[in-house]
Length: 183
Image (cartoon, rainbow, N blue to C red; front, side):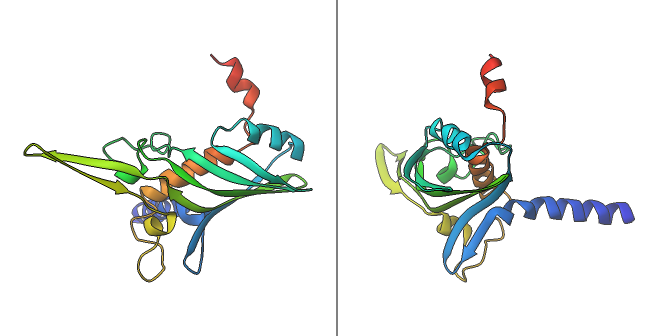
């Protein structure tokens, strides 16, 4: 009985761990995570410049602000398959938004806000007719219910995919040189 209870607690903790990086303020949802690093602010800027989906718009003494564009959610890295991924998060849809990276000694905080899809066209064929529609969404539409609370199913699939993608995009603590040597 103790083992079953412990297993339940561990599974529950793992499932809800994905929403810890999502911040809900009013009706706005943002993603925020603090990383510890030995890299300097300049090294982080140089690493950030290598990320194709990130465009630096403003650089201050200890922060960087910019835009995210053409970001494809990485459902595979999150452990999902194409068929098990919501259509709005598969590789045919690209996302945009804004980011801010704030730096302090030994750590930095990445914040992503105003995330929305750039839109994708969905076409369904049947009986010789093709019906097309544009599919757009925002992080708020995916994450929040009508009461402004996190949806029950959000942490399991969508939240996990988004969290893994954003974490991968803004984790500058990994050693980039080792990746280049492994071919």
